[in-house]
Length: 506
Image (cartoon, rainbow, N blue to C red; front, side, top):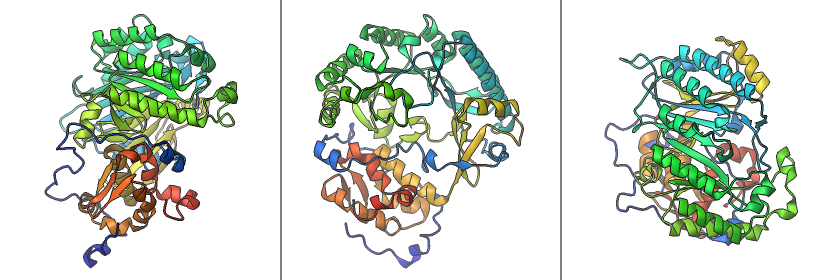
């Protein structure tokens, strides 16, 4: 691509992009208006190996790695200044598990003590109560409006059914939840830790989406990672969830686990396809025992070779594509009629700390140890994270005041961050960035502003991962699996940390 020089009138805006929107909105340039399907996904093992560089998952920009210690009063100020008309997405982190999964790369607390969840719930309720006092309700309403809620972990169903009822009913007193058909209320479930009445309880409360952590169905793989359950159990849970009226069911799988082979994973995928979940997340296992203690239980010799691992990925993509699943991006697949797939084709998909979402208009408020919030005020946007150590978190909740809040790290995003976030997220959600759209939204000439990044994408253009012209940058079918690497070119924080990766065209 050889971009033309911008008009002089736009050059002065390069250092001061704005978020002022035009009076007349353009038609959405990210909608696939002429097609009912997204561009196909093409697996090219050689290109994947060529561009095999670790890249962030970009659940935010800047990423959580850029957060820095903050003054205690900042979180209270942000919550008080939040724009009341903006709806909320609530996230609750439940850090407990009853079993240690050897592939785990999270800071989970392994315990069988039922009292732990009760104690932790009390801390959550206190955090909810205090934060709610700082939040204003929109005009004409008594309570802030919630459109999305997610319980993650750990194992959220570590909470008993009664404790889940207590949490949900208390939330109803503090917030106004939109109707079931408009709201997205989800929870992660370990199939091994599901009570006889838990699904029915969750649905009665208002949860409408579940995610099952399956990882693999092969017996030898399950034994190797210390996570044993059978396919019939998973199928039974899915059927019960459908009968109860859950509108979306997700299954998590992992490729690259010990004892996993291309043939065994093909059998797992075939069996999962028979169960017909609405969504699938197929994650890459990264073996880092020096960082994650649990992974020391896994023997290097049991891991599939790099070539077998790529074969597993390629086979999985082929099987899911043949079964009609749409590749959303970053490990995620969905049926064409699932709300994520529909939103992507309509150019209305977003990404936040809960992953791909329809709720891009929400402020995210996190509760619990290590939970992350993303909140906008009239002038700024902030990303904050609660204390990551359980004892530290509990001490901060015990001492809650305007000068003592659970968040210990944060970053205030600049307008240039917002510009780069817009580019990165549209590449990851829609495989495209439209220069005219960027120019109108941020008051810049995008080609000039991103000239260095465009030049760095030259090698990817030659390898047909991307296509660039005067209209914008489009990720091509062979580039979709490498979207994070493409988006990373626009990440100035990564450029500063790893200049060797960006010193020449990549």
